[in-house]
Image 1: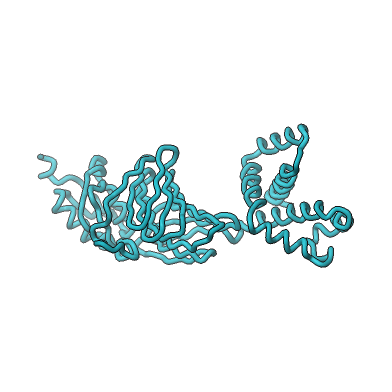
Image 2: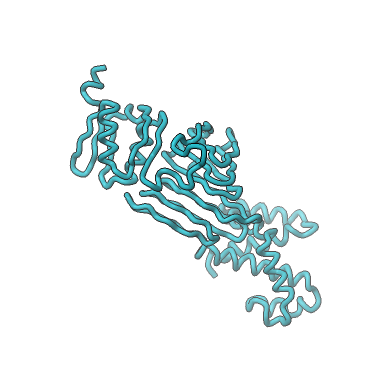
Length: 332
């Protein structure tokens, strides 16, 4: 038996034991000791406790309880539960529950945790196990885990447009740094612009936006917001969308609409489409506010636009693009 399997089985037994009407003091102390011994114990227990009360387990137990013969039980339980089932059906049910919990938790990660990546300049469309559709921008990484009781996605970098399959009993959360987007049945876009800055826009339905302990907000169709350093700032509707909210975000067609956005954010957008590394020679340039509609899928076109509009010097050097203040700008 592997260590992971042993931890899962121990966690399942503790979930079942603590769910009983009464538990003695010695057992409570043993549980506290087990939980404190390893963070993996705490993680397994938390997940299995959630599954214990889920619809998925209820259905599994219902089918197990309706089985016509002991031989239909999991192989590992046949010998241990043959006598108990005839005399104590509740004990047999609990034992079966533990086996289902342990088996589900051990097996699920092998097919439920998936990392999706899109290369520089290449978008990617994926369909998740629950039927949700996700479009990834260039140079994007998304980690997804679909479990019987919850669905989670972590935007490691880049930008993604989600069209989430509605499920009443199973939540869907997207994490971008310290920002969490809780889906209420919707289509929405999440742009992780840097480690402390995330932009969210809703195209259908609503989401609950959580920026940590300091800020919370519900966004509905047409709403846009930025989270910067754990603070939420709402934005005016996209002026390019008119009275009707567009069906998909601008980036899917290679565009980025900027309104007083730091130059570093625009550069990060362009970097998703540029094989060359883009470097700001003066770090202070990163905070320069820029506005306009930029064809980020065409880096050279963006460089030409910001060179003229913001008095910048653009140079190409050994696979890199170097951006610095122009002499005219330095003299102002």
